[in-house]
Length: 492
Figure (cartoon, rainbow, N blue to C red):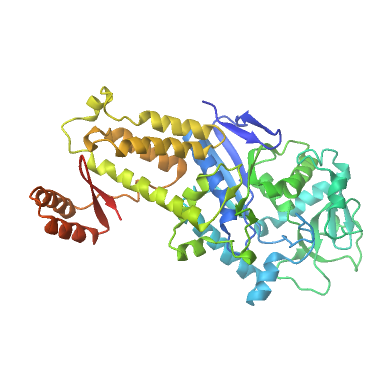
């Protein structure tokens, strides 16, 4: 089955085909590193990790870049506007009496650390915007030479009227957007949709992060306009993509909030500069809300992974929560929903532990292959892959796994096809990243002997001793569940 992905650019499901055979280039819009990411931010990163895992499973070599916005993202006065307001990092730095560089480094390291905790596939490169200043200036230079830029008092802007396809990607009604603005746009701009490529530092302000504006980029060059400056938010992504992946890439990912402004601007500046298509596929994840309300730290529902840990949950619990929703669907976050995901993951781990309890049998797996009464899970592994090939349908994949596991727990341990169970667990870990095998070690021989001794005690109806043995076993984090087929040990 061919991998099918929903392409925002065409608004339809398309068969994926890479530019180069067996190689895929992916760019993911990364975080602005001024605070801890909350559960809504992480939703998309989990989805794009599933994408990477699927493509690797399909045999592709994946070259993936994630950027770090450590400069140039302003708070904005209008929805989606990053050209006005305060610098997000500078604002945080002032609050904590640190430099913007210190803030950027701290939250960048936290982002990388939490990616590891979430068991995300390591990208080929994590690219900081501040490491690509020269490339951003060169891209602005190309745009100026092609007459796409103009200069006003606070910076150098891209003239969107000179890029006829500007509104096409997001199907924008520019007049309606202008009318709906919460505050008045900069009157110096030629068009309200024009965006900053390079911002001049305020004359009265010494920024932590600023660079000399090259003279050849200035329309007006005199002492009053010579200024230090910094890149606009959008230019970094185009410059980093071109420097690391090329002028046209296979897949660009991000959140749906990026569609009308950030990604629209990326396309405009990139294709204006190169006269080439910027990305063949655009994938966008939906929002997570909390009971219909936007996630926000100020509202008390913008939980970070650190917050979840204090509540007794780990990163893999959140990962399970995230993949329970399709990436294009709006998910609903609550502690109760997270608890349900935690319970599901715990149940799956106990089922994974059955692989340690199926080998003491006179039946071998080859015999089970030809016995319809024995449970074979090979088809389940294939069905999981096929569900993900259909636009990363993780909810369907989880349903398939649940159905197979439900049948499995009703089977006699001797009827379980051990090799196919192991293969299914490995498929789940490879594609969904839940680390079932890693987190479900076998118990030691002493505990196994105690379980056998408890069986003998129960056979003699010595219930008091049986309960004592069970209590002693539970001290090691293991409990025993008595079934019609004999005892099954599970993790507490």
